[in-house]
Amino acid sequence: MTSDTDNRRGAVLMMVAMGAFTINDAFMKEALTQLPLGQSLFLRGLAASLFTALITWHGGGFASRPNRSERRAIGLRTIGEIGGTGCFMVALSHMPLADLTAILQALPLFVTLAAAVFLRETVGWRRWSAILMGFSGVLLIVQPGGSTFSRYALLALLAVVFITLRDLSTRRIAGRMSSALIAHITALAVTALGIVLLPFAAWEPVTWGAILPLMGSAIFLSAGYLTVV
Image (cartoon, rainbow, N blue to C red; front, side, top):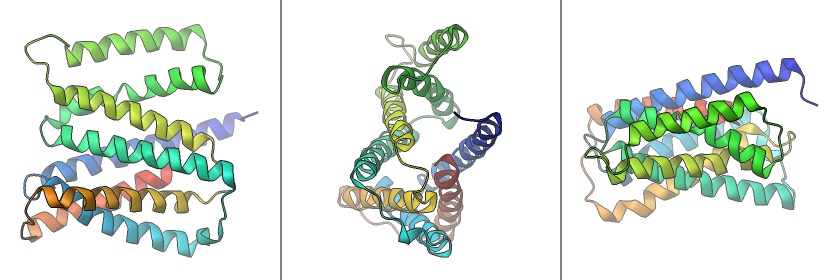
């Protein structure tokens, strides 16, 4: 059973993670005005991979040896992270950050629903009511069929589905696994996504105006990866 202290600690860490991810998004929004998506993901990923590698090494996390079940969960988590990052970043480059962040508020609702269905976790009627009201709010934001509807809003919702897969897979990873190592694997995977996207746009000169938001993004992304795990 999970204690109230564990619940409170988890809630605080999740709030820190969401704050870190939001600041990361703001930095990336600025970086994407100067550099293509693939280049931005690649450069940010290099920095985040370095940060998480140092943290993992300092904490002895590289000594962790996941078993078969944990490797499967890490694989699913990585797929969720890559899919979520790809969909979210494409949407971020075409949508106002405020609208995208509002759609992302559906994430806790999706996670709660998926946890009840796939992990058999208990969800009371109050939470079910909140899920229904939350979905109604998301529909008001997305407005399917309306004049303001765009495929990028749909991509944002798809990102929520992928991130839900990421978070549910994280629950399958035993507590003995190093959080820093999982964060490092995630950073490497997203860097690989940037490499895949590099050929689709010309390499742009990297100025200080791009370096500063990319470094800020990498720092807060690393913090988000660590605390969300």
